[in-house]
Image (cartoon, rainbow, N blue to C red):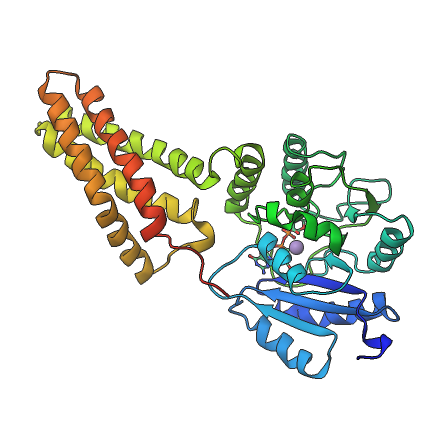
Amino acid sequence: MPTSDHIIELSVIVPTYNEHPNVIPMIESLEQALGDHKWEVIFVDDDSPDGTAKQIREIARRDPRVRIVQRVGRRGLSSAAIEGILASSAPFCAVIDGDLQHDEKLLATMLETIKKEDLDIVSGSRYVEGGGLGDWHKSRARISRLATRLSQAVLHAELTDPMSGFFMIRRSTFEKRMHNLSGIGFKILLDIFASSKEPLRYRELPYEFRTRQAGESKLDSQAAWEYFMLLLDKLIGHIVPVRFVAFTLVGGVGVIVHMFTVWLMLNHMDTTFTIAQTTATLIAMTSNFAMNNILTYRDMRLRGWDWIKGWISFTLACSVGALGNIGIATYIFAQDTTWVLASLSGIIVGAVWNYAVTSVYTWNKPKAA
Ligand code: GDD
Ligand code: MN
């Protein structure tokens, strides 16, 4: 049996994507902050192209406190944090960004607080007395405050900073909720609180959000979409799959593209209804595929040749639905109904078929790690 000095009390989970320049400074700052605690750091790297994983592995070979989980074929800050905690056996886990923007010196206080007050979670907050946003861009701060207000709809707690990616959680608390987590997007703390039926015992400690030392933020425009998906999942995920909602929203745009194309071809290109409906169906299919690829299935987004192959598979999978769409629409149009009603009827028939088939064949389930 290992001696007691091997028993890890705290695993620090660090999700990374292109953080090569920050790895050594991060480990050094953890060493200073947690010196005499029994700690380990588990980096969860999503196959960063800048060689982050290789660099961590070289350090981990010499230092048993440094570990790495390298994920291939999927991305996401929240799911990375979840898998990091699952890779740990310590009674306490902390999640902290790998770019030194969170104040690692707070970790020792978090550990002391979570044990002494027998809490479920201790999180870092930029918005309690003593906290701050550093020189965070005003627009980011505004978005963060808006997101915080929106989150109140799904939160069962008065958190001042539910957007915080910096917190410590008791393993038993996590294990009770891990099967309800959405794991979508960036906001793991919000996911945990929104997945908790009984109230969580928590405390927020102030910290000053620091300027990023190197590399750049990955919080891109899609993060807003994923945040919207996370809120939806918490609000109605138990009724309809959020992916279907996203698919329908994207399909809604496809309907507009479709109807505009039919109107254009009937009124300005003097074609038959069937030609117009067929062309519109193909154009709408392509627009749906492109939007679903960057939004609904972002975590499994296809690129390059895979995009072309995905488009072919999507079009083939939708072709039966498209034939049903065009057949039904042409038949209804022939019964002297308006082209709008005929076109819409065809679209509805096609949409249900397309969702069922493409979520199986085009965007298959994420590859196992
Ligand atoms: N594994 C993995 N996969 N890590 C990721 C991914 C990903 O897809 N995207 C980002 N990361 C890592 C980054 O490498 C960094 O270590 C950390 O997650 C935060 O990413 P940033 O891109 O630096 O986020 P930010 O600084 O704009 O916002 C952060 O701080 C806010 C305030 O706490 C995030 O943690 C936000 O969620 C948080 O609200
Ligand atoms: Mn950052």
